[in-house]
Amino acid sequence: MTLSVRHRIVIWYTLWLVLLIVLVFIGIFSGSSYLVERRTKAGVVSAVNEAVDEIEYTEGWLDFDNVDFRRGGVYITLYDNDGFRIAGFAPDEVPYTAFSDGILRTLTSGRNSWYIYDSQLSFSDEDSIWVRGIIGSYDMRAVVSSMQGVLLIVLPLLVLMAALGGYVIVKRSFRPIDKIIKTAEEIAGGNDLKKRIGLSDGSSELYKAASAFDRMLDRIEATFEKEKQFTSDASHELRTPIAVILAASDYALSHTDDSSMKETLSVISDQAGRMSSLVSELLYIARADKGTLHLEKENVDVSELIEIVAETMEDKAALRNISIHTGNSEAIIVKADRDMLMRILINLISNSITYGKDGGNIWVSADKGHGNAVIKVRDDGIGIAPEHIERIWDRFYQEDHSRSGGGGSGLGLSIVKEIVSLHGGKVSVESIKGEGSTFYAEIPDGTASD
Image (tube, rainbow, N blue to C red; front, side, top):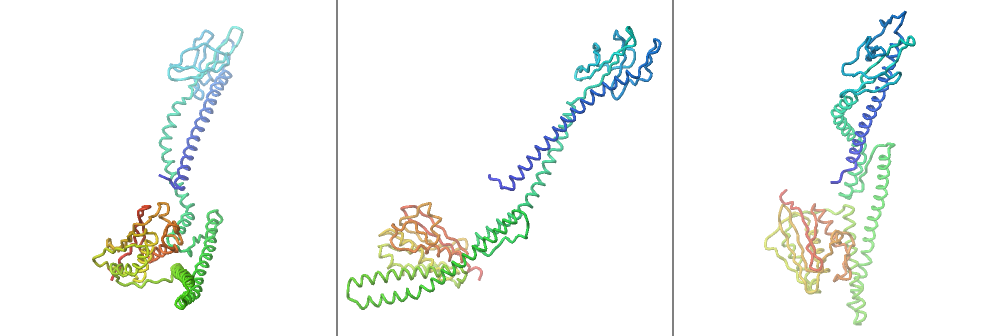
């Protein structure tokens, strides 16, 4: 499954935040551990030194009344040189160990650790005592366990809050992109170049991109409108001279007995006829692009229309010894523009004749189902290669001129698609290279709404 950009941003943002939180916890733990350990060690040394300062020795008498034997969590104990305790107390689980003057040591007893610091207080060459300070080492395992518990509770909440917050932030940030995508899809789906994104003025890159996109659409629309107008104007202007050429060549053909002249005039007449058909198709497409084609809907018997068109196309098919077969025995009624349906049939059958094989067949029929009438034109001609299937509906596209039987303009199928789309239907094709093709034109049935 491919994740969208916004989802990937939210995921990476959440993962980064989780990593940051874990690193912060580790940093706090490490820093706190170091500071606590340092403070604990300094505390036991300071407590012992203060106790030493408070002990007095006068004429053989030892005065330690001012000594606080539980100073700041430090156990203070006084010993003589033989290791007998004079005053104070120490935790029971801390075993006795030899003295070491001015050295801070760590003693492990069972599962606990202790810091021990000794200081020797001498009164004469023979009289001296030891002042020992003991404090429990800060148990970092308990801290780790405590922090793990906190992390297990807090981290999922932070992840959820980060994900929701990140999604909201990203969603708000992507609103301009959503509008750009929506506008682009509407233009692509409806061929409406008049649509614009229309974001309000803003200084971010997305607003600038949307503004640039709108300006680009302005230029594309202007260029496209000029192209449509040119096609329409050119088609109109070409109709008259082509009609004159046809009329003149036909007149000349009927008033000459010269065989070579007749052959030349026949070529002129044929090519002028092709030009006339091409101009007519161009004009039709120009009107479709400009939205000036209007449907004159009526109840049409598609089966009857197939018989009429097939009969009119028999002479053209006979030139290549192609047989046209119709297979409808019952009426297929659909509400549509009769002339446009006839043009669909003419173009589809002409296409099958052009790309059929000599002595081949064309089958034309209509089916009714799911509220639609489906016109089907099948041939046993040269077929279409898979890589060309999607392009055959493009204007002027022809897969292989050299293998076609006649000089098609490449506009017939695109006109079929335009007409079917105008009726709210769809076109499709099935083909096997070398075996033939089947074209489908699905027209919605509007008779039920009457």
